Length: 423
Image (cartoon, rainbow, N blue to C red):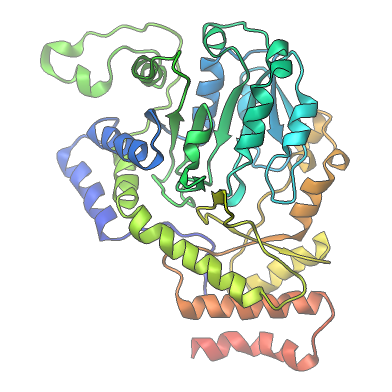
């Protein structure tokens, strides 16, 4: 078998949207981007949405928008992809890493202990699509003790009067919190539409605004749209219309806009997301849980509770009793069977850049334990029942070999199973 880890969902509706864009001969930022922003706004129930060319650029934009600069601190989890901290570094500020909880997400108690008078923002990451404990985090940043520490040093900080709460929702479009879109829980929620995400634009992202009433969301949308276009007061579509060619540069912006040719892919996908694509992901996650539930080593990922529900972006399998080296061998064994898997994530303190900056993995024991036991399994709408069954049986066999708890006959199963299924 040949089972990829996370291929993009490309059906005829996606092809039709892209062809329509090409035939219209308008491929940069224009009507498709606007339509995608409206679709995202609808499913997230947030106040405004600004599409950008990546999650990373969206995070840099919002940190700069809030006035974050050298000398400031932004609290981030140690267990996340590097972009979460890199966005902070790009603004000249310091990422303050804290450990995570057993559910992969940032530990609110560690946040509370890390807040200082230099703390300007918190970036909480919804790992695998599982929303963070936003109720606890919000209580911390709105408490009198923490608000008294906050120093307002920019126009936006004066309006907010507290630490900015950003959701790194790169994984979590469609996740729920108290039966409402999880994107409503933070001041700013930023999605990724990278090729492996639940909804993709090949490369891209979106910023969702859910700011307090002190902010004029319409004005912020207009300002941020200009910010994505180098601070220019007219986009290319507006300039193309006759006498409207003249433009001005109002401030030092960034060039991070999403083009229509990319938005077209996401537009087709998002229109069938809640009805078709998301339910299929949930079904696959449930089948994984059923397939592994009788294995003593199986640690089920957080998927649904009375307060939260994942969007099933990843299935982060954890194996009790498996060492990091054994986990790596399981991944290699699965690859030899044609099953591509992944690991989410290597904790940032284990990466050269962050080690050189003084971060030490020993300070983040839960992050390391989650990482050492974790294998991300394929989960996407195109996955067939036959492929899913093969993955489950292969994982069980490969893990049991590493845990020295199966017989030689079972080892033969691993060698011959791909041939039997392929025939």
